[in-house]
Length: 250
Image: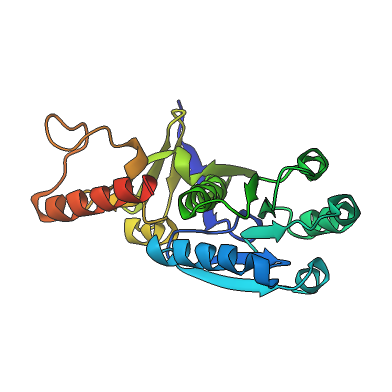
């Protein structure tokens, strides 16, 4: 397959929301200041701290308050009240404003489960759920957002969008670099390997002076590697790959 000549590359942020790559995850709880909800709020805060997730954590009294905010929200926990049907219009406004956020409903019981699902939340939790269940919902929401992060490439009068998860590895080619995707496409770009490395998430690992590989596509370390790891980078590669595996198992 003929390589595509690229003249410009940029990492897409904004609506794709960069999470768990060193930046803070924006987490909000709406209708979360009532006394009966305080334990759930503290459990969310505890999960973020225990899992070492860098996060900005906000609690809003009602939907109106959060709708007036201008900052993005990655994950929104909305505490459903007893008359959920009357809340749906406001919830739809919430989803429209934060269309790329993960909305998680939290209720006291399943009485209004059917009505609540009309708003198609990412998850549905109960106030009585354990920290383990809250953690699973949080990590799932974070990983779901991470899957959409990518880079935009421009060349030959066309634009190409590649999800970071679909990049297999990147290789230095003299003054150029080659970006190789899992679907077999190759993109040639005039850019130092070090510069493109700064655009990538921490799941990309430098194996040697010429190559950076996506950790999710490493089958195993040791043995007959298709890409050689330099002696200088071997210890760091093992450390970084272990960190990646541990993070994915959170």
